[in-house]
Length: 444
Image (cartoon, rainbow, N blue to C red; front, side, top):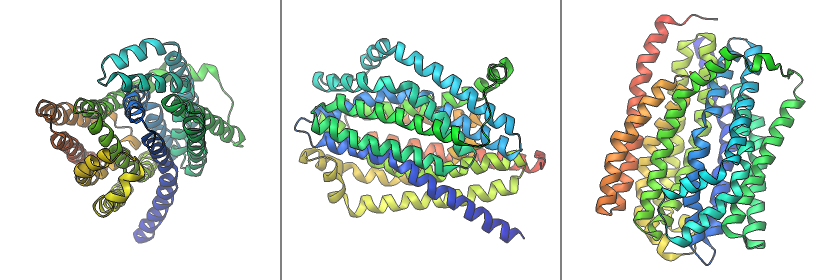
């Protein structure tokens, strides 16, 4: 019987992971097209400017990443426990919060832009390109945050096919619009931001249509949505995820900003390497999203044995994804990097430092899987503590040495140690959690 259950879990997990990978990989592929189009323009400052301007959106959007992460775990646990009212209230409250925050970001775009670029480092032309990118993309804030909630909700319900449709349609449109606005109309960085903004509204429109077509969808009940206890619980749950996300984007943003201190060529080369890393991470995230959905379901059912089997399977799949990209970095750097830029000096720098991607990807695979595991269980405090320690103590100290010494190798070492620290601390926490679950969880 247990063997059949294991086989059933494996098939269920791999099905979800495969669909999630197809959905998530369209996001970095669109980013790679952005990089390739901008990287082949005559002036390299547009590529560097968009890399710099993206830092602002990393902070703005990833700060509110709990809208996706908290929604998935909460929805999955409600589904596992058979509480359909809670399933729909999770969506409605999330959309209300996302729309409110997104509208505020549009209203406050001028101080956000001024404050954001005031703390970034870049040459005058690079910063101008970054500002142009920001001015176009910022108008998509409400759509972006609402799509976070819709995607998180569909993931929590294990409806990955709908997530696939949303993301692929949005990112294909982004690629097409990139071509039109950047190459066709010559809008450069502004055109890249405009293409992204329009594709974000398409994503949320498709998500809302899929929800509306659902036969079991339930009407809004404002009294329940705005219930103080419900909203307070939602914010308390998301508080720790927020701090975890701030730690994440701080490390990635500092990495990019420190790269700019080392020179425009290093910034452009590191931006290309990060694009490759992001592509790999989105493959792994497809597995992590499946882990997130099923971990929440097992928690809702009170099944610690199933949770342990899930974690072991997820770590294997995540490592396999990372290993595949590590092999690609070793055997095909001369093919990979020229696809993203025609500037030979940037290709040479990317090739010189590209081997750092191997340990980053392998340690990162475990970190991403554990992220999904704890997000599905809505254990935000564990994620917060791991991320803050890894970012402040590990990454911050080593990255600062890299800037002082002007050494890009040390900067990539800081990224490697950051990933390793996250993987080790979360692994330790998972063992304690699983032991506690065996003693206290009750089947439902």
